[in-house]
Image 1 (cartoon, helix red, strand yellow):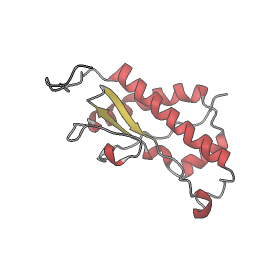
Image 2 (cartoon, one colour; image 1 turned 120 degrees about the vertical axis):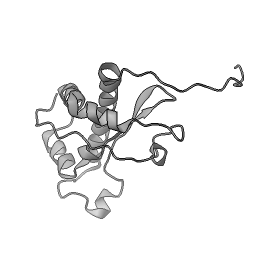
Image 3 (tube, helix red, strand yellow; image 1 turned 30 degrees about the vertical axis):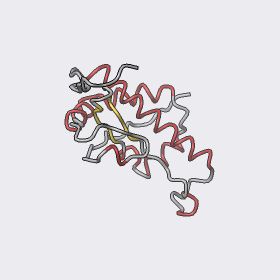
Image 4 (cartoon, one colour; image 1 turned 90 degrees about the vertical axis):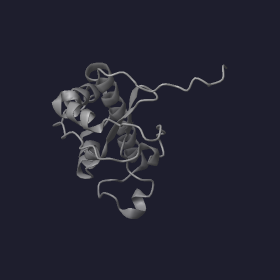
Length: 151
């Protein structure tokens, strides 16, 4: 299907402990390398990722406008997960109580909420893949302890 809209600005990455997210678990006291990742996003990784994602997304223009109105694209978080040698991410989303909170006047169905949330998750993964494959040139520094048991 695809989506033809103006690319929103890349997110500004602020310090958040990724372990506070329900969907992430990262080694404590890690260097999340957010400054470097944010620089890559501003140097083209965000736009490159957006274009790749937009070619194949099922997100409609109306759903995009809701996500834009809610400033969801600015709420992405990306961080380096040294233990897993990958870029981790937290995708923003519309909360389950969107109806009770009257979250957005154009939100009328769970289908729309699900589509927006799923599309944001897909975008986050594309950004991680682009960052890892095309921008990151460092290696993981994690060294496992020598006393790990053999399985």
